[in-house]
Amino acid sequence: MYNPKSLNADEFIDHQEILDTLEYADANKNNRELILGLLEKARPKYENGQVHCEGLTHREASVLLACEDEELISKMYDLAEEIKKAFYGNRIVFFAPLYLSNYCVNGCLYCPYHTANKHIPRKKLTQEEVKKEVIALQDMGHKRLAIEAGEDPVNNPIEYILECINTIYSIKHKNGAIRRVNVNIAATTVENYRKLKEVGIGTYILFQETYHKENYLRLHPTGPKHDYNYHTEAMDRAMEGGIDDVGLGVLFGLDKYRYEFAGLLMHAEHLEAVHGVGPHTISVPRVKKADDIDPNEFDNGISDDIFAKLCALIRISVPYTGMIISTRETQEVREKVIRLGVSQVSGGSRTSVGGYQEEERPHDTEQFDVSDQRTLDEVISWMMDMDYIPSFCTACYRAGRTGDRFMALCKSGQIQNCCHPNALLTLKEYLVDYATPETKAKGEQMIQKEILTIPSKSVQEKVTYYLDQIDKGNRDFRF
Image (tube, rainbow, N blue to C red; front, top):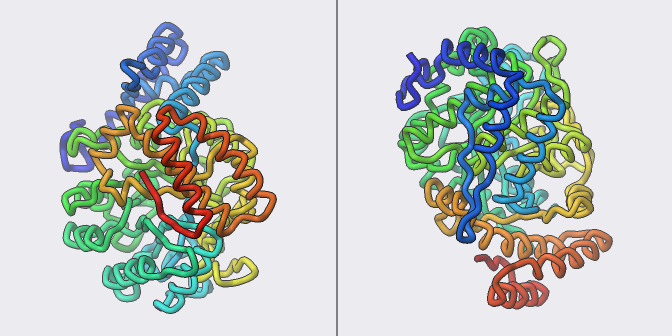
């Protein structure tokens, strides 16, 4: 029986509720009056200098997803862009994945790290290799990492993950520093989540892969990840362990996208109902080619147009949540969905274990093919060409503005009073320390233009002072 407040995965992701939702969506996909009413409900409301968005339920949003009217879809895209601008302005946050180990005991059918793959080289970074990878990332300009590791209690125990995090935070190279480490590792215990919290992680990320339980069990035939309920209930244990920023995601292409979309929103609603705060981020990866993985074996692949529609409707339905897109997607696709709601992107990524310290991109231990293979500087320059401010900001996490405190600021629109200036300051650091001359010139011009859009004159003056200090060699100013 569907119950968003339940801690049982079978009840907060109720199969029959999803089927009923899809049936309701099909029955109403041509109901123009209903759809226009839902778009109006989701529209940002401005009052006393603050902005509020109501979002949509999984059932309401599923009606929009089922709608095939091009005019109404265009209105959805316009609304997604309006909501994105209301809460995130023209800032795009940058991060990079760091693969620690590809040892894994699971049998996931869509991942080349699965235990049955006997020809992929298995590799685990030593702490010295972690240091080299981090220095390589710092030399690119990165400040925020998402660490990745296969599930293997012997090779990748929680102690190894904790040691790697401590190593990452300890490395100060030239002007480089990793200021936030997000963690994408397998579902674990409350005790282990507490340990991750204690070493100062940012967001705990765990992709559901698929919310369709029967298909989930088929796709995960062996290993601890086979336990659907333990995996799906991981975010509740993470919250119990003190981690208040969690990131959801499904791997689109494993099951029918409308089913996954409803399940994803139900999971977000569950977190809000139980913990008072929804997901900090939602990721939208698609199945991609890898070592022994052919995405064509999965018959649920989605077109770029459907993918863009999903991104827009996630932004409309969960307006305050950060949305992440990786280098799995091409430049063209990334450009389209950034406008529709994406607020975080990776750049210069390598998905192999130890890939950053190699001059040439290694392919033998890649988790998936990277579609956007441009350098970080090229992506930064491209972003500014589209009038987005590349941001390396980690201030909210370091100032304790996480979980419900972050969401309270975000929901009131006040987060922009911090984020916009911080984006300019971290961009300035990148320009001074890492950018090519062409990118630096472009960035300096953008900073001068964007300072003038800060409403408060006193904040403008402080930003100008901090920018001058950065030119003089000082670092890490934040609001």
